[in-house]
Structure formats: structure tokens, C-alpha cells
Amino acid sequence: MNFLTMEYFVTVAEKRSITKAAEELHITQQTLSAHIQAVERELGCKLIVRRNPLELTHEGEIFLRYAADFHRSYQAMQAEFCDITGNQRGVLRVGISYTRGRSIMPEIISAFQREYPNICIRLDENVNDALLRKLHGGEIDLAISNFDEPAQGIVLHDFYTERVVMLAPKSMCPPETGDELSAQELARFAGFPFVMGNPEDIVGRISRRMIKAAGFQPTVKAQSDNAETLFAMAADGIGICFCPQQMINMALSAQQLENVRIFTFSADDRYTINFGFRRRPYQWTAISEFMRIASETIGGRLWTEKNI
Image 1 (cartoon, rainbow, N blue to C red):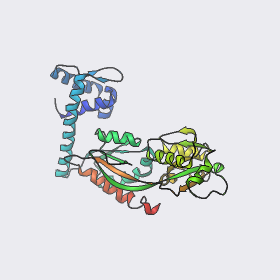
Image 2: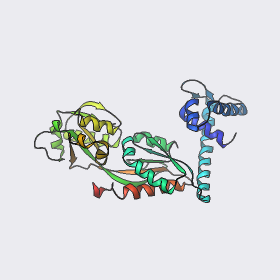
Image 3: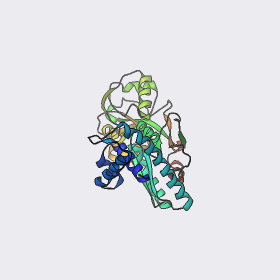
Image 4: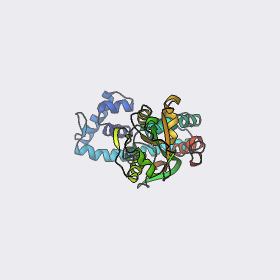
């Protein structure tokens, strides 16, 4: 039994599949199965039940607790020696939402790779709540997301400010409606269909709060976790959506933008996107360097509140 075995078992437990775990680890299923069987022989008990999805036995759950601790220690050791030797290499796992990732990550990763060409960025694109769970569980090293409040064991740093706007097909805009809406003016859209985002995401929560303040129940024609899908549906005239202002130009073509109007709000419609990472005895320099480069590339130039 060694550190490699611990990593293999943690991955199997995460993926609940020998096949998926082997793909993630870039080894054969036979090699992975052999490692698991060797541990089972050494401990004298079964650790997994081979079915779909794979299940851990009671003994497997206990072993996972120890394996996860060893795996975290091994990762911390690798990170510290990367810093000591100056030989920065490995995988940095970054969690971010789907559309936000498409909007900002290509430029950030390009800048990061110029300074750290031997570190691979592995993106985990998901909704905010899932990113927080994965950060707590050690499945990602860094999350770029909105956090309502600091969670236990999580360190937050501000990145940039986003603003919620409403994207409406021009055919659904009441006459003589200004570009900035109060709650009373938002109520004028009550009779039109809406396409809504995830109610647990930050934009979903803010938009539903605004609609409630306007005093109406929206007719929801579609719901999606993917903001780009909502943008496209608004541009196609299916319904009105709420979205981060900064992402619109990235997601829609000039022709699509001709079909919609963008409305801002007089109420508080801004929120902060944070970097979040777990508090650890030793923090890999690559995490702080990624945050620095991201802030210099995006946060300090295009995405601060003064530019909104």
C-alpha cells in the first residue's frame, strides 16, 4: 500500500466507477482493479461492491477516510516541494460556472501558461452550489464563484464585480420603456414569458427577488443552468431572461444583439465574484499565482465595477 494506491481509491470513490476512474487516472482498468484487489487482500476485507454505480462497503467507507487524508497530505507535500525546488508542475483544478468560464478562462489560462507552462489547468464547470461542495470535498483546488458568506474552512478573495441585467426580445418590450427599470417598471413585463436560470445560482436568486418586489409571478417557458442557452432563447424570441451584463457580448452575435434590448435596474443588482480555496497547512504557490495572474489579466482591466 502506498500513496499511489490512496489516490487510486479516492478517485474510484469519487467516480463510483472503475472505468471512469481509470480514464481519469490515465491507467488501464486492469491496473486499477489490481491495485484495489491488492489493498483488499492486505486488509483482509472487501472495500467495494462491483455494480453500476459502484458502491463502497462499510470497510470501504472507513478506508476512504484514511485514504483521503493520506491523499491530501501527499498533494500538500508535492506542492511544497514544487515550491522548494522551483520545479512548478502538476494539475491545478479550477471550478467555475459554464458561461463565466467561456467568457474569461481562455485569456486567463493563456496568460498563466506563459509563466507556468508545466502546470495543467483542469476546469470543472458547474453551478455555484456544486462548486462549493467540490471545494469542501477537495475535488477542486480553487473556485471562481459568488459566495454569499465565508464558509467554514474556505478562504475568500474578491475578484471582480458583476451586474445583473434583463435581456428581452424587442417584441416583448412595452412602448416607452426606459433602459433602467424600477420595480414598478419591471411589473410592466408581467404578461410576457420568461426563461429562467437555476434558482440556487446568484443570478437566479437576484432575478427572483426582483420579480417578487415587482409583485408578479412570471410565466416560465424554460429553465436552464447554462446562461448561454438562456441568451440564445431570448434572442430567438422565446422569453425574457436575466443574466450577467459582462457575458452578453461574448455569448451573442451582432445579429442576435439586434433582436434584443438590455435593461439595467435601479435596485442593487451587483454582486462580487470571489476566489475561494480551502485553508490548508501548506498552500501551493500555483493557487496564489493563478489568482494574481487572473486579477491582472481580467479583474484589473475589464471586469471591475467602474467599467460596468
